[in-house]
Image (cartoon, rainbow, N blue to C red):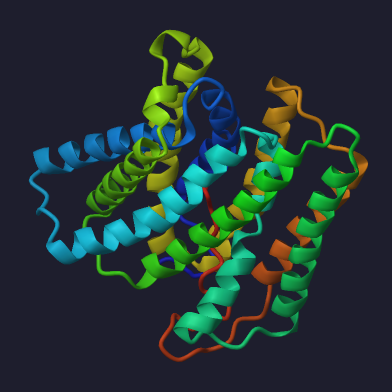
Length: 323
């Protein structure tokens, strides 16, 4: 058995996949949503990824999911993919990919609260409380910086608000997924979560009239390549690695990507989308990342009914991509 203080090679590779695959999804979503409607984009991505995984598992002879598995997968997919990821896509119509990633980085803060309030996690200690307050302060600073910017548009405030809800939904889904009854095969579990969440995204997109907004002739090559990245790298590799490592590694280890992904996203946005952070934005970003770090290093305490850690659910992600 591996020492709890050592990271095995499979876990290290899964973490790297999450770091870089999901760090790049923010820019990919930004490019894809330029000519594709947000909810249809998210739905197409997850249905294709889920179908590919399901067919792969079926070909291997993996047992088909039971009704309870589909029910739980629908809850998780609804929270994390419809409520979390697709809202990030929608928000990136007005918000830069780097800023979106930084707001999504607050997910561990919400997960701490949800784990404590809903599932009997140990009462937050001084580290966690300080991290929560610091994280919320950082998000307020980000929004305030935008409001004071001369290029501010009212739609940006809606984007910030939507991103906050996206973080809440993703956090709720992550907490729920830790206790939900799902197929024993990790890939089959991921497949049905993608299928269920993707179908929900498509239904919402259709109900919002996005089919009339989709003009195939006007879809850019950049959007199509970005969609391919989201399907094969973001979903098949990134999301699969996240769900797998969520079950295999200590929460404190998995939660490290909460402050690695935003850095990757900001650098990619700067390099390929001409996005820039002001000094005030950079300060707010450091405040948020410091908050996540504080919660991650918080001393562990035993808690009945859980895995024995006060930060058992500090595993963010909107794809995580992620979110």
